[in-house]
Length: 533
Image (cartoon, rainbow, N blue to C red; front, side, top):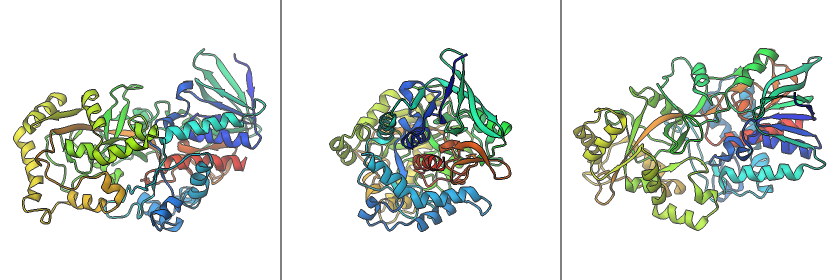
C-alpha cells in the first residue's frame, strides 16, 4: 500500500476546472494534491484539445464591435433557450452568476495571464426562431484552448512555493472517506502499479468531468421520448464515466440532476487516427451543404442548417432511419466553410500564425479539405454526382443512394437560382443570407449559389454521425460550488466544479447551451469553490 498523502485540498481531475482550482488554492496559501487519471502528456483533459470558444458578456471586444450586450439580455436568452423553469433553482442561480461575472472573472482574469482573444465576436446558436443568442457573444482564444491550458498549468507550477503541490498522474479515485460527518480523505488506485493510494484532506473538489464519456452511461441517462441513435461517436473524455457521480450519490447523498441533458453534436466523423476506441471529431457543418438522409434525399421539410439550434439538429439526426446522414457540397463550399472543432485541426489559430490564418480565411482553407480527402475515408470526393453516389454506397455498404435521386435532390435546390438570385424560396438560403449579415459570419459563409455552379467542383459527400461531447447535468451545487444533499444542505468539505457539476448547480444550461459556456463555466465554478474555502 502506498503511503497516505496529506494536503489541505484534494482535487480530483486534471481538466480545466481542476487546474483552476489548484491554481487558486495554491495562491490562497493552501497545500494541494491534484489527482489525474490520464497520462502526464495529456494533463489538461478535454481543454487541451478544445477550440477555445467562450460565450462572454459585456467585453471590450463586444464594445469595439458595437454589440450592446448586457447581463440582463444574456440571461433572457440563456433562460429562454435552455428552457429553464422556475423550479430549476440552482441552475438559474448559476446562469445569473455566469452572465454577471463572465467579463471580470473569465475575460479579465485570462487577459491578466497574458492570453488574448481573436479580434472578432462570432454569432452562434441563434435559435430556429431567434430565441437563442440575441447578440454575438462567441469569443475565440488566440492559441485555442491549448494555449489556455498550458498557460494555466505554467501558472500552477509558478504558484507552487515550498513544495505545496503534489501532482499525481495515472491515479484514479474510487471512494471518498468521512469522519464525524465531514469529508476526511479519499482512496484510489495507482493505475501504473495497481497499488492502493490513500489521501487525507479536509476539503475535496470533484473535477472529474461529465458522465457521457461512455455510451453505456449516455444511453442509460437518455431522456425518454427523445430519439436515440443506433450508434454514436465519442467526442467526450473516455474517463468521464460517471462512477464518482454515482458513488457520491449513493454513499454521501449528493444529488445528480439533469443527467439526461447532454450537449452532443450532429455532425461527427471518426477520427482518422483515434486516441481511443470510438473517438470522433466534431465538424462544424457547412451552412451551405445540403443535409441528406441515407437515400440521398434532402432532410426536411425544414432543411437542417447549422448555427441555429444544435439541440434540435441532434434530435432530428437521431430520428433518421439510419445512424448516419450525408452532407453534400462542392469544393467551393468546403474551402470556405468546412472546419473541425478543436485545437488539433486548427493549427493557424493554435500556433498563432496570423498571416496564414488570414490567407486561409480569405482564399479558402484548401489545406484542410485536401487533408480530409487524404486521411478520412468518410470524406468522399468525385467529379460527378453519379461517381459520388457510387462512392457513398460503397462506404455505407448499401445500394440506398440511386444516382437519379441524388441528381434530383441537387437540381431541386439549384432551381432556386434559375431566375436569378432574387426569386429563390428556400429556408436554408434565407438562413444563410441572415447569417451573412454579420461580417465575421460572412467571411466564413459562401454567397448562395447552385451546387452545380461551373468551376465550383468537384463534389464532396461527408458521412456524418451524432457525436457525444458534454454533460449538461451533474452533481448539484450552490453558488459556492459546495455539493448538496437531498435536503439542499452542503455536504461538509465536498465541492464540485466544472462539467462534474453540470457547469454549476447540476445543470446551469438547462436543455441547450448558448455555446461556449463550458470553458468559462469551469473557471467560474472553480474560482467560486476556492473563495468558499
